[in-house]
Length: 631
Ligand code: 6R9
Image 1: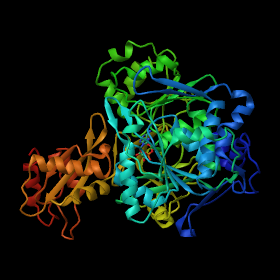
Image 2 (image 1 turned 180 degrees about the horizontal axis):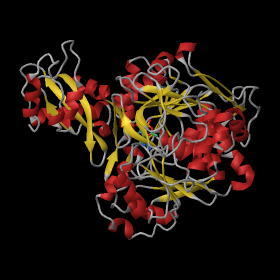
Image 3 (image 1 turned 135 degrees about the horizontal axis):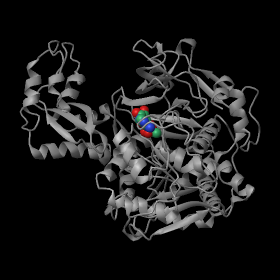
Image 4 (image 1 turned 120 degrees about the vertical axis):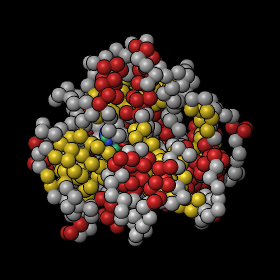
C-alpha cells in the first residue's frame, strides 16, 4: 500500500476518498500542489471541486449504514460516578439543534465560531455543528488565559463564542465564563465585537445563578437549544473550503492560525486513525488529549467518528481522585485503544506500578503516544506495565500543521523499537536534509522535511500566506520543513529528536520562547528576558527564563512570583516558567544577539560545555550568571 501511495497518490487517495459520501465528485485532478517557493506561491489542493460535508460523513453516513444505536461518546466526568453516553442518533440530534441555533443567530458558511469549552460532550458537538453549516470553528484550549483568548478572537473575528460557566478539573474549579468576559471586553476595546456568547451551564461545577451575565449578549445553551428541530440540512462545501482554524505557537510572539480545509483532512484523519490504531468496529477508543489541541480535533472528534467508532471523552484529570483514574476508566468502559502523551506516562510511572496493577486492563489492545519524543524508559514502562507486554505502541509523529499522523507504526506490522516512530504513513515522503537543505540518504541525522503534499496538510496561515511560506517552505526550498530534528538508523527507522527552532515542548504543548519573553517584559520591572527549554523529568521540557530587571530594581522572591504570574495571566498556567534566573546581564554578541546556546548550557548546568565565549561583547556576564544560578 505504501508503494502505491507514493507512486500513484491520485489513484491511492481517490480510492479511499470514494468510501466517503460526496455530493459531487471532485474534478479531473485529484490533487494539485506547488511545494517549491522558487516556482511561485505555495499551493496545496486535494479533491478540489468535490462537494461534501465532514459532519455528514461522521454522523448521517454512519447512521445510514446501521450504526444509529451504536454509542458514539461515553462521557466520564471529573467526579467518579458522574457520566453519560450518547448514540450516533442522539449525537446527530444534538448537533442539528445547535446547528439550527447557530444559523438562527446569523452564522453563515465561512463565518468563524470560537469554542472555549472543557471536555464536555458539548465540545465535539459544537465542532460538528459548525462543520454541518460550513462555519469555521476555532477551538481555543480552555487553559488559555483571557489575553490569549482575546488575541485569537481579534484575529479570527467570530460571530459567536461558545463556552460554559465553569469546570472542575481535579479539585480545582475554573471559571471559564469570567475568562471569556474579560477576553470579550478586551477584544471589544480593539473594535472586535462578538454579538453572542452561548454559555453551557455545567452545573456539576457551578450553578447558573452565580454566573455574571451580560444581557443581550449572553445566552444559556440549555435555555435555547432544545427549542430547535433535531434535523438540520447539510451545507455542502467544496473539499477546499475551510473547516477550522487552530492557533499554534511559532518562533515569534504571535500565534499562527493554522488553517485546515475539509476534504483532504477528512480522508486523511479517517485513514490514519483506521490504520495506525488497527481500528476494529468493536473497539472502545480513548484519547486523553483535549479538543483544544490538534490531537483532540483529529483523534477525539473527526478521525474516530468518521470510522463510526465509540469514543471516551474525559472531563477530569488523570490523577484525580487518585493516580489510578486512567485504569479505572479503561476497565469501566473496556477501552481497547488508549492514546496518550509521554508526559502522562512519565508522571504515572513515578507513582509506582501498584496503581496500575490493581486494575485489570485486559481490554487494552493497542497503545498510542503523541506530543513529544517518548524516551525509551517511559516507552518500556508503557509497554510492559500498562500494556502487560502484549499491546503494540503506536508512537505517532505529527503536528498541528500536518493534520494527521505522518510517521507512525502500523501495530503488529513490523518490529517496534522503543522511542522510534518507525516509518512514514501512506503517502508521506519524509526526507532528512543537512544545514544546506541537501537531502541525506541512509543512516543519518538532520532536519526533518517532507517532499510532497499529503491530503491532511494545512493550506495556509490565517491572513498571512507569506508567513506560511517563509516559516515552512523557505528554509529548505522544495520541501515542507517540520521544525524538528530527526535521525534515521540503518534499518530505516525514524527517530525524532525534538524541535530545532525556538519552540519549547512542555508536556506536549508547544510554547514559543518569544511568547513567554514578551509576557515577561510586559512586567514593569523586567527590562529583558531570554527563555530556553531545559530537560524536565515529567514534562519533557521545562521553561527556564533569564530576566534582566529595570535598573535599580532589587531581585526578590515576590518579584519572582509576580513574573511567573504575568506569564500565567497572559498565556495560561501551562506556560508558567519553572525557573526564573536573575540575569544582571545576558550573554550577547557584539552585534547585540543573545547567545541562547550559552544560556541553554547554563540552564542545564552543563557548565563544562559552554564552548567559545570569547565572541561575547562582555564575557564576564557568563561567570556572573553561573554565580547567580541558585539564587
Ligand atoms: C500532534 C502534536 C508538534 C510537535 C512536533 C514535535 C512534537 C509530536 C511526536 C513529537 C516526537 C512524536 N511531537 N509528536 N515528537 N515523537 N510522536 O503534538 O502537534 O502540538 O503541533 O506539536 O510535537 O516536535 O513538531 P503539535
